[in-house]
Picture 1: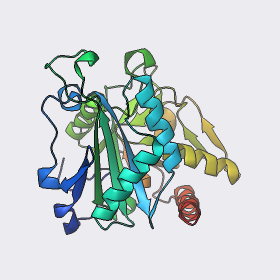
Picture 2: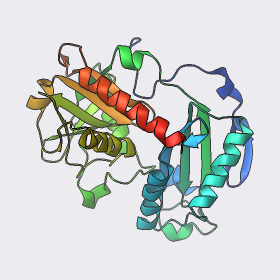
Picture 3: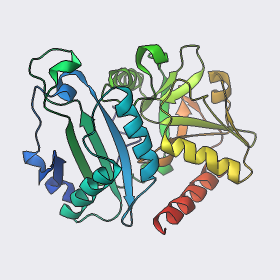
Picture 4: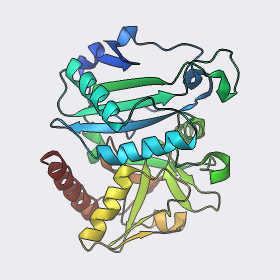
Amino acid sequence: MTTDSHSTHTASEDARNRDIKIYVNGDIVHRDDAKVSVYDSGFMLGDGMWEGMRLYNGTWAFFDEHMDRFFNSCKAVAIDVGMDKAGIAEAMRKTAQANDMTTDVHCRLMLTRGVKIKPFQHPGLSQSGSTLVIIMEHSKPAPALQSKGIRLATVPQVRGLPMTQDAKYNSHSKLNCVIACLQAEQAGADEALMLDPLGFVNTTNACNFFIVRRGEVWTSTGDYCMNGVTRQKVIDLCQANDIPVFEKNYSLYEAYGADEAFLTGTFGAQTPVAEIDGKAIGTGERPMTERIRALYKDLIDEEVSR
């Protein structure tokens, strides 16, 4: 990355993160002591699922939606979580308490198939139960994410078909996205804009992608991308507030000519896009993005006040 680059996960520096405590299979230990086996299926094969969540004033936003996706994904690939949703909530509560965390916190919840008895692929070699890790950091998006926006480059790496590796899995196997991000950086951008197998605009390597054209909000069909919780909340907010919103196929032609573009994700909520393939998006004015951000903030306030 160039010196003026940043990503959708660029956070303001917080010295408290040097001494955070991490949950590893029931133990909560200093980050320097948080370890998993080199035989763990997550390390060896990327065989696992994860969720990213944010803590606002003591409440994990949209916890139920995240858990629905997490448990559904684990069921689909036959990983035993080892506890129910209440158990996950309690593990997260203990981890937050151990770190004295109440707000502006990002959590990465990770579950793998567990430690293998031999260093090979077969799932049956993981015989001692799954590995659960919870990392929480004090984390606020850097101000530049809103003031500068993200520079995207369209890359040759695409999100594949569901019968190869379904992008709806929030899987540890992120090599497809890592390659896309590398390709974007090599093109001088911050992150990658990925197309679907038919050549339509799909998603970025890290977030869902939206454009605004003539007062309408467009995003992909969702067939080839992670169906993000924040993505769905934006769609719901648009529908509830008389903002025309469409999940549809569209090409780079429409994206280049958009009035605005933004990304959605748990960490940054809605992050503006400044340019795609060196082409500035709109005039730099972002009234629709700002309106959606305000609606989303109100939704978060409502969520944490329950």
